[in-house]
Length: 257
Ligand SMILES: CCCCCCCC(=O)SCCNC(=O)CCNC(=O)[C@H](O)C(C)(C)COP(=O)(O)OP(=O)(O)OC[C@H]1O[C@@H](n2cnc3c(N)ncnc32)[C@H](O)[C@@H]1OP(=O)(O)O
Image (cartoon, rainbow, N blue to C red):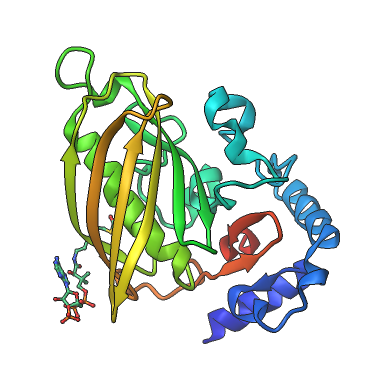
């Protein structure tokens, strides 16, 4: 489509490639040169991206010690950090047609939040750092089961996005959660999910929400559909792709005005 051609043009001007072009490229080209390019582009966009795994709102220094290794560029135990522009750049979000703040990815959120997602494409594992805030309370000092379930819904959707060609290419249709142990207001927990199998458009997913000491707070068996058409706007925002970058996963929305 025209929009895809525009994305390719913008991406090539910035020295990036789209997910489809990545296949054709030689891996060696994707190293230091590209990192410098994104840092320059990020500076132009007034973004704070000082290191490859840093977001605008949540970085390694904000994470508790047990989750800091997730950000380690050398080992990258959970794959690459994901930086979707609609989470990181509120002004772009507003001028690009969103009407509110994300239920799960609002940096100022007081309910339940995913603060950082990491995607390991080799094993199809999505890992999240999550925080349960004061607006998720139900029983005294404890959180709603729906806050855990919301996280699982978000994970099912995002696994299909990162496994697929583009942001928002799939949708969650079933979330079956086992709520095993209550979560306290203020807890920071690890969310981890994977693709068990794919049957046509059906993507079967399982996930676990766990604490530093290994306590499992919830498990989930879910189903997403991908590809699926959830929006018929068909503009440059809807037609984004993933950009190939050696250290982070970025959507091509970063190349839009
Ligand atoms: C908001 C996003 C936050 C971040 C990501 C989180 C993900 C989300 O929250 S997405 C938003 C929440 N989800 C929704 O609103 C989804 C609402 N559901 C729908 O719109 C429709 O069910 C929709 C469009 C997904 C169906 O897609 P469509 O392409 O028509 O699928 P369809 O052809 O009917 O079904 C494909 C297969 O999936 C199966 N299927 C579809 N829905 C379900 C379901 N709920 N349960 C079980 N199986 C299902 C069908 O049986 C079919 O199976 P098979 O291929 O074996 O025959």
